[in-house]
Image 1 (cartoon, helix red, strand yellow):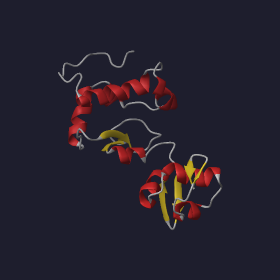
Image 2 (tube, rainbow, N blue to C red; image 1 turned 30 degrees about the horizontal axis):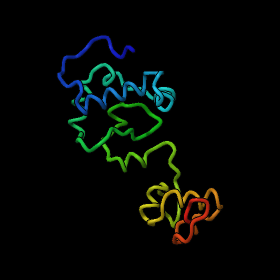
Image 3 (tube, rainbow, N blue to C red; image 1 turned 90 degrees about the horizontal axis):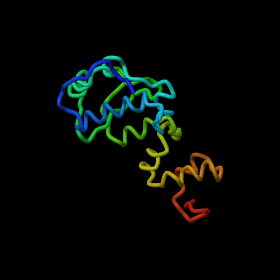
Length: 155
């Protein structure tokens, strides 16, 4: 697996931030990895500046809010890893920026199912079952308190 033409001597191999950088490269370029289909297989790449130099990525990371409790997040999930499209985010923010999120509009607000779950206190799986499996309206699904268990879900 050839990622660059030279090796840097930065002394950070094995650190959390280096593992994040390495993980991006693997997701984008290693066709043998199970998650390749969701990244490189969809055309997601790393900008040349980062792909060829961990030091460049490290400098950007430190100047743009890197902390040990944050993860690298692509702002537009359909675009590649680059300084213009990446940020450091909490897991909660990142989970709301996934390609498979279902956005629900209700009462003039649009949120993911996970966000509506936090707002309403109704389990996300319950909201999904009410809408998809039982055909409830959005209003009914988000405003009806949990009542009883049907098929493994409270409805």
